[in-house]
Length: 477
Ligand code: ADP
Ligand code: MG
Ligand code: ZN
Image 1: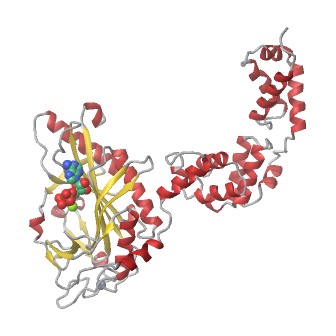
Image 2: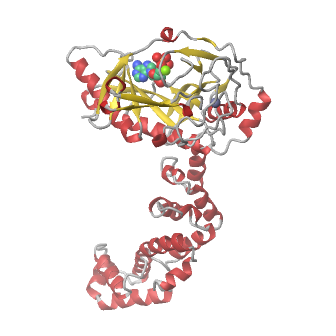
């Protein structure tokens, strides 16, 4: 049952951590690389050895600014704090993170349907190492022993905190998909959920529409868009059930278990004072000069939302209508084909329905335009055009050659006219009925033409010819 169907509204605020695509870590020169032999990309700084000092990675600041700019944030002077807590994956016993003065504040992300989700902040921090608990189902308290890999310790992260503007599991998935596309487009992160370079925590609460926000729970361990959606739906329903029984939702951090499809208590919510935040004394404040900000902004590529708006304008569609094509990275192909003379609507339709395969983005725009032209001219039916397109992507051959090789002979307009006239002559009853205004009788005539041409005729062209013939026929007495 969906939460809204019961008169409840789901409220979601997402916190997304993304690993930045820098060559080195945030405060040392160790490589920032996924998949290396454990504990090989480490040094005194990221192992937290006494006497070592952090040095800020300029490139990480640049990528953080790019993220802020792409999310329409204000870039501000910021300072690093120490967030103190004990856990074996963090050798210093504190994480260096931006706290009350983050580098980016007050932005928004626009979804394909045009709705906006507020971005409260997007701040820089370092990642922790990675623990693996062996035995006891992988949970720390039941494990026989634990392994720790510090390769990830000190990898630069940006945490993007969204406002509680999301109202459904679907919208939450759309938000993460859009954010991922932006991060990849601007080169800030490879944003792979399956490798942990994009990690999502979902804050979920429920309320009666119009009432103040309810108490939220934060759900961790969401490793895919599918898990994100399922976890939000489960958690909202869990809270609704509690409230309808007259019980209260307790603010908690919960863990999503993919195998049983439920969230489980992890710990009670920690408060800021638990972390004993204080300014990191070994780092100076970060205040990117306006000039540097401008340089970074000038290098931003067109963002998915801009690309959708542009493609929609050129093809006469809507941003939501072209979302899939932009997501596949085929907007450049469609635009180039249109520039080469292709019918925009047909080019877009092909990109959406017939070009989901690998390698479609390498299609030659001129050849694609030629294929669309053949279809528009009635030389290929829609079905034939699709088959030719598949071969074009596979072989790179020109559409004319493929059509010929496949026996899709050009059905010239003379041949088509002849086929239509033959059909009229062969079925005078259907013709008379059609001329008398019975549109259904048209089907019999079109069917005859198709049969006679073994499906090679274009249905639209046949209909157009029949209409032309009828208009020219002597009307009923
Ligand atoms: P904290 O400092 O405890 O992490 P924040 O105020 O920074 O709390 O909020 C963290 C996240 O929780 C944000 O993404 C925000 O949108 C979300 N959030 C806050 N209140 C609610 C609520 N009532 N329901 C759902 N999400 C919420
Ligand atoms: Mg938080
Ligand atoms: Zn290091």
